[in-house]
Image 1: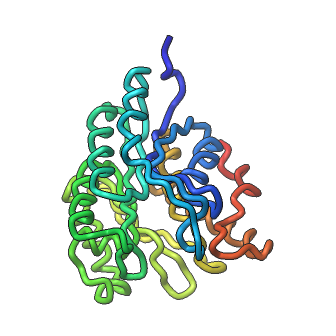
Image 2: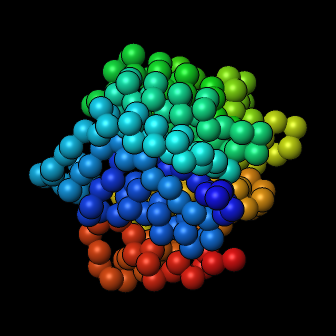
Length: 277
């Protein structure tokens, strides 16, 4: 009996119980797009780290045995999507996962979660950033923000943050390392939020969405989930990015109307109907 009669995406990320991010948003979003979401937890959080206190349990030592049981089941995936990874060993485990499970029809999407606002996250050492570059080389699509694009390319954040030409060059440089498609996300431009979409010899454009509300936790995970499922279903990169940006824009508006704290993420539940094909 085959376990592979439905399109599946393996999502490798942390699980956060409260705060609407990571696996907790990937599962419902990918499911709404009618793709099965299969989860590999990298760590367990009671709530994400933007809150004053949180419970944390590292899952690194359990990941390989967890994945081995998927191998025994003969699982196959049309998509592999990665998010926050806590240390170098996890990156090596994920690289091994990709080597084993990637088939000709598998799309690998890497969100290289390393920092924001020009600053690396505290857990990201120089060695860990180098390892993340190695993971990016195995991706088909990579979705860094500007900070992460700068880390991947060695650029100075303050020099490129407002320079669209340099942002485009960063996307091209990242693509040259391996991934055919690059989306640099969350580019602030006056009244707009832009995403730069690059696919060599196909497209290179800034897609704009009208800026609404404040910056909320978990929107990057929603963005990655929508792109992953949309591409697995056969959508184009540009259409997938436009869908993700429009959905997040609407979610932020609804969340502001509810007066939900920024740390609590977005009220995506009200709008999942928008994703149902």
